[in-house]
Image (cartoon, rainbow over all chains, first blue to last red; front, top):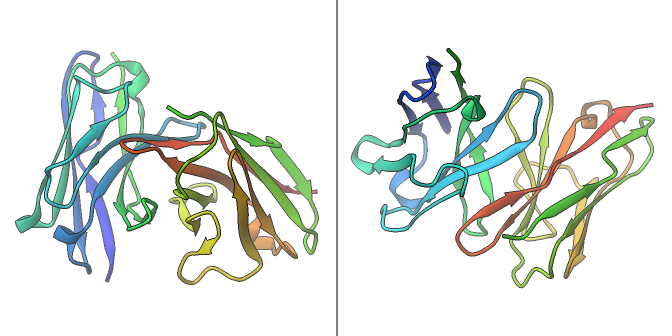
Length: 118
Length: 108
C-alpha cells in the first residue's frame, strides 16, 4: 500500500526539542522529494521544509529557518524533522507529503500533532 | 515570496450548482506550478489539480483548473455532497512553497 506514516509528535515545553519521523511505503522513496507541511488548529496549511530526493537540496520557511532541520534516510524509506527551540506558534498538525514532478504534493500522511505548551 | 489570496472566504451553494473559486497571486507567476487541494474536516489534504489545469489521478472531471499570470480558478461543476470542503491553492516559487488561506465551500 502506498502510504506515509508520521510519528514523534506530542506535548513539549517551550524551548525544548522534538524529532518527527515519516515512514514511506509502496513507492520508490529515494526517487522523490519530500516536504513537511503543518496546520495549526483551525487554520490553513503552511509549508515548513523540503528536501530533494538525494538530500542535496534543502529549503525552509522563514518561520522555522535556523530552528528546524529536515533530513532523510533513503535506505530506511524515512523522512525526519528535527525541531529545536519550539514555541507555542509551532503547535500544529505536521504532515509529511511526497513531491511530484510538477512540484505538487500528491501523497500526504495523516499527520502527527505537536503541542508546545508549558 | 509570492502571496496567494483566495476568494471568497466562504462559498454557500447547493448540490448540483457550480462552484468558482479564485486564487490570486501577488505577482505574475512565471511557472505553471500552481496546484489545488481539497481538505475535509479531520482528513488529510487531497491533490486535485496540478500544473494549473491537470487533474490528479482519480479526480472526477467535474473539477477543472484554469488561469495564468496572477489569476487562477478552480471550477467544480455540479457540486456533489462530498465536494463540500475547504480548498487551498499552492504555488512553488523556486525554493519554497506558498499556500493560499483557503476557500470553504459549504452547503447552502
